[in-house]
Length: 333
Length: 295
Image (tube, rainbow over all chains, first blue to last red):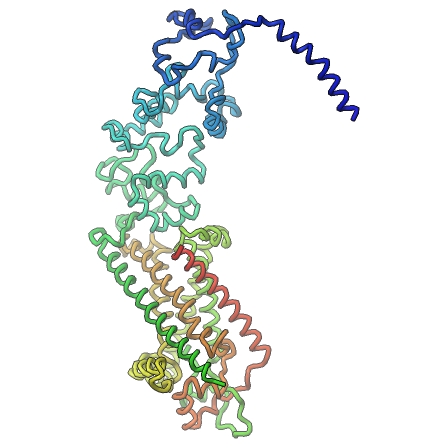
């Protein structure tokens, strides 16, 4: 009770003081308009002490997706300040509007690297991929995060991976303008990017491959590899173990991991001692495809007759038997 | 499964009694399965359940219960290890049984193993009795006078033998693909995996649905037939269920040779326990399969 009274008194004393503090600031401070900002930052030669440019291209900003917004909407600490402002501004908090994406980013390996591992300048934040004043929607072909630009954007840091990716068939499809060609974010996701060496992530990629190669993943699911990975174990091969990850090539290409001449080597990564006969195994069998394997087709046909035949025959046999036995039972006193 | 013989002169080796028994001293029960046969059924039962439980996570890897069942065996590697163990034991049991049958036939000179009323080999009589049984189902005639093994029992027997041989061969190829590839082409592994899975589906559903019904769950036997756990059958049951065999043995006077004391309460209790565990595990696995296929 006394504590509550104390709190009341303290609040009563504070209120006039706070009001006075507010009155001390100029009452008619208007936030600087975009024109006010551009008056200085429109100068293309404006630089910081360390030489980095402070120029903002007003035209590019206006044509960006944030064009209708005020500078101080993002640079929020300037909304209550008179110009010229202090040289050091608070970092822009994109998550103050994009809070769902902010949450995903905070769970990502990129945020972990930046906040926990201390890679404060190397690890990407929002602006590293999206840019700053020239941000465009990801559907805009000139956007840095448009599908066609994603390999270049990610590759600005992951240059070695991009080199591999550019050699692969998916990069070729992307270059052709195929909108279904997978880019980095299709497998790795955009904002909540995770380490690529965890079981959970490795197992999730198969479904991503299947989003285009549905039949191929279906046939894989019927094999020992497909079943064990479906159960959630990664000891056996999934797509990338045989086909590669970034530099996937069709089997017709001699450099491909699954080119006929390289199969002994590729299978031999796990199956030490694999020989020419061993690699005649079909990792994507289809029992309904006679041309792919006639023996498998016949085996499938055989069991499709045998299993329903057996169960149909003995199922009916049991049913008739049951009915007859019940009749006998009724007759008994 | 064919170890008990009711035909003289081989009878003298396995029959519990050396001669006819005075009517007043007759037991209510006669021997149907000797101890090795009972042991063989237990081994087949345990390994079959084990093989089904450890193989089903892979066969139905997309079922919601698959991972949990695999984790029961400490993951797919543990399940695989147990699967191979059960497979080897079952293969061993079948090889032992075949060796035993051939030893009895060719070393001991036992007759009637490959043909006749005591044989497991399908014969014209079985087709006739199947037809008579169908007529009986529709109340168009009496039940056939079955001999030592009925046509559905013969089917069960040959299904286990054929299934074990086929799945054992396919399983060994899949277990040792590197060794197999010295002589076999790799595409045969695809066939081996497919056949192993298809034959497994056939075997599991057949045993857990058809064999369980025919052998144990049908009216008259419900909840289970104790003969495969105690080895003996009452004279009364034998006369009803296998009139052919009963009349044949009674006429020749050899039925008394099979005279055994009725199973003790302890033996019946033990049989009930083993049977109940086997039946419930089998039905549980069968429900999992139904759930996986019908969902």
